Length: 249
Length: 106
Image 1 (tube, helix red, strand yellow):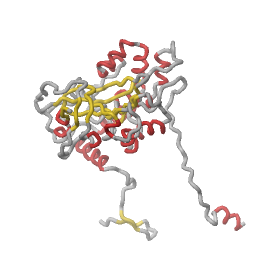
Image 2: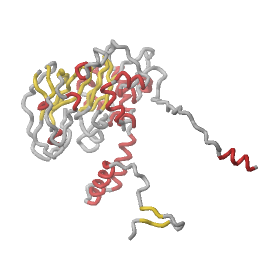
Image 3: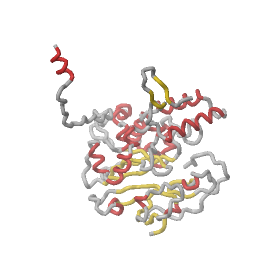
Image 4: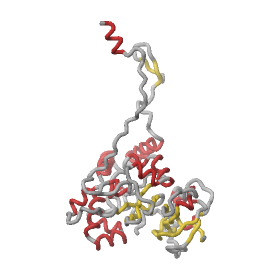
């Protein structure tokens, strides 16, 4: 069999995958998954259901945890003492469903409490470690090498790019989750939220506030990263097609 | 805190933790034997133990399925100025995790 095929119009090209961006790790994942299915460790349907469940976890549980910690000092103390145990009080069991910390991959969680003089921000310089049972899948930018290497070296500049500029007297503490702890930021409760219910408070605790690249404030209920359009000079061709078409008329 | 994965080999717990919160430690600059999670940016730098966290297998063993021996892990706090001398803000810090064998008293 030839490794080239014809389109009937005389053109020939070697067979190539339509998506070339697949990484070695994705190839490895597919190979291991297919082997596991072949050997009966789980079925393709099990895999589909698990993936859909893992991808459906959002940051809502983390928001609830922060809102409850803001309104209940005893709960906050338990969160800071043993966060995995405290998660059970808001209905999140880190051991579910495999018994050893899936989808988190580990069962050590530490919640980092911000104060008026200390601001935390999390990163995984090695890959993309993230407290998934509480926050779901990490945002795409969290996994980029740009964020991972620059946050450790230039944290204030990176935070400024997210719109967060902190005064020099506030200590910026970068937490690198390079081993088996997973981290989440407990931001300070903002002014203007007195007498709010837990539900109201949870609405302003967005994913970015729990990563530490934003601060909660009344009215801010979504992480919006505006798409910056490149402003580069556009060079017009000497004969734009529409002009050529106009000329024919 | 709970151990993470279900072990295949019998677990051998680590002994008493060598360091306590507040101790000054230097990260060793050991050769990387195939795999390590100890970043280059903290090698040889002195920091402070911020927390004694858990006992677990070290990544250098785990990568090769040797999951019997547990080791004490720590969170170590570094001043940014100790990592990068030209860093402009005195108060800022970075914390990373490390198993005990990568640390020595400073």
